[in-house]
Amino acid sequence: MSDHTFRSLRSLAKLRRPAPVSAIAPGAIAPVHGVEPAAAVSSLVDSAIYLDGDRIESPTTLAETYRSLHSHEKAMAWIGLYKPSQHELGSLADEFGLHELAVEDAILAHQRPKIERYDDTLFVVLRAAWYVDETEDVEFGELHVFVGRDFVLTVRHGDQPDISPVRRRMESNPDLLRLGPEAILYAILDRVVDGYAPVVAGLANDIDEIETEMFSGQTHVSRRIHELSREVVDFQRATRPLLQVVRALMNGFEKYRTDEELQRYLRDVEDHLTQVVEQVDEFRHLLRDILTVNATLVAQQQNEEMKALSELSVQQNDEVKKISSWAAILFAPTLVGTVYGMNFENMPELHWHYGYFVALGLMLLVNVTLYVVFRRRRWI
Image (cartoon, helix red, strand yellow):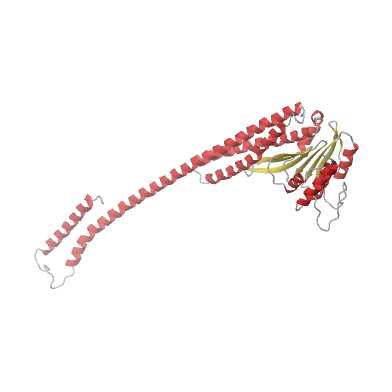
């Protein structure tokens, strides 16, 4: 495809899209190619020009990086950006021929791990993760990597992941850096995947703590299980798609004639990532089982509490029966005594010689009768 045809297609694509990625705010001065506005705050974290595995220049602006790269044949640029503006990414897109869809993704962020190839440029999205001991949470960061024939561009939208250790590692190993931009991409992948190991260890420790808390009867366990399950799901969303990215790179070994050393390097990354993905899958199954066991334990505890309440209610009913029975027994002689204690002149048996003894006998008979009745019904 000729340069003229490629530019025509890009122009047509921009006409179809409502908001081009390199759009300039109203009233702003149109940027000149390779020239950066003086008032703009640069997002450039580090920029370096490498030749034959050695760092030969460290430009401080994008314009200087472009000039240095053009002035050295077979040189390679590695540019690191932190929250770049549309102007900066537009400048990079013009210089390196980045596809506007990839640039738009890099501006908007919040992408899933993926790999896209646009002609000779690879666009890779990575999700880094790290474990915060203080809060026992898993945090995530996003990294966008553009890889071309003579450049590597990394774009971060958060403080993590920090890839400066990758740059130091590559610069200390010129033989590896000499293999070109793909070697840098594989080193970045290795850095991100190695960062998953502490997360796996932290999640495993949290699961062990939850198992201990669950059998100790602590009430907040259910909520912690749910929160940890969400963290594991988010971690799985960061790791499983990345495995597809790595395998896609491996599938292109023969087609793009990848160096054998890099092939071994990426296979090692794929092996470590596979272990992480398998462990995360096990965490999900284990948390699901833990949640089921916890629900069973909670149900058993509720049944025991209901049983205890039922027993207490039965005991209270027995006490009420006893009290009611004795109240009835004591009430009967009181009723008889009250009637005969009114002392009216015309009351029957009031002046009878045996009236007193008959009244006592009647009281005793009623008491004995009530006692026998309540005893048979086991109220007393």
